[in-house]
Image 1 (cartoon, rainbow, N blue to C red):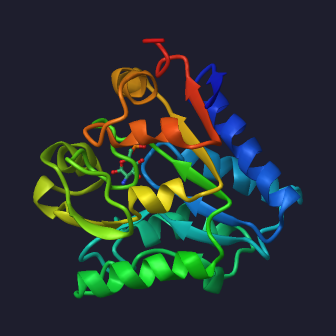
Image 2: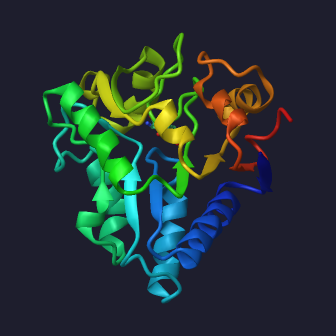
Length: 241
Ligand code: GLP
């Protein structure tokens, strides 16, 4: 694991955006695994800025998102489809056909999970997977559990996750209770992983994930076993190191 210390959120976003840019420049037809949540917003903003300056070309880039709420349609402003379009896709020259996000409206969960896993395989795997870190150690929506789920699957969100994500919804009742997520196996098959973490409220869980035992109780701890992980975290998130 390589750990890069950033001064603050802005610095973290620029460092992480630089790593993603390097990937796109070195392999213009790369497959990027993308994440949502508040942490990557600054990264996407920076990538859009560099795209507008003519420094980046997304015309051959393919993407696969980590997760999507079950039951939310694409036009719901809290769907991850909407998030990705608002924060990145509609601002750059990526082709819609090259973007992949689980379909939250597919009622047959097994079918959608299998379709999505196969879609990622058909892309030839993920070159660089961007990850945020949940307060309970989740990556994607892989919540703490007794096992590391292998492939894309449907999950029941934990109360703490529903609570953490309610800030994006009008009320807690509107937060979906289920989501599709890449499995831990799907994530671990990415050639390179970029974990971004910001803020003092993540300091404890980041410390557990990197220094603690590898356990499905802290899903992100599995990253200790991946051969190529880069962590970019700000000083507040690294305050327990
Ligand atoms: C969300 C997402 C994750 C994200 C995490 C942290 O629920 N499913 O992919 O990394 O929780 O979110 P944030 O960056 O807003 O703290």
